[in-house]
Length: 218
Image (cartoon, rainbow, N blue to C red; front, side, top):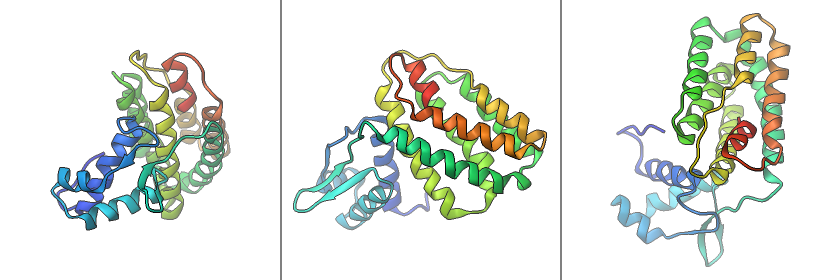
């Protein structure tokens, strides 16, 4: 996630905390202490509180009366729910985006897939996977829909990082390639159906190796 110098301090704080929560460096259920965060970022409590509101809107934290703010926990059935929501919303976005997808966009999406195949770690793979999805969906021109999809991607990433340990084997993403083949051929229905199937697979509860976790999250 890049940070612009002109970005408001509250957004910078929210971005930094979101990265820590998604990667698991801040555990689910952990309390976020306003004083400590304000000191770390050299900020007053006002932007920290605004950062907390942004994180709460993304579903990453929750406010508890008289107890402050805690990182939300991941329930056992959430992966399935998130996958079902993503499958519907991303297919909708792709159908609206398809008429505006240029060769340049599809070429860049293919590069993102190749970069994911070469990823040396799960963080790099997750970033390239998200880049692929954003590239083929952003031309839909539906900002509210895209914001909802972004929030669901964040939740998906938390499940991915939670299950990952030290080993890493970069997967080959055949679904991404099949989606691109369909889009290049003008088969929008086929591309949308493949995308939905691709995402619904992520709702299956993976067990075992990090490779299976990544295959289920892609």
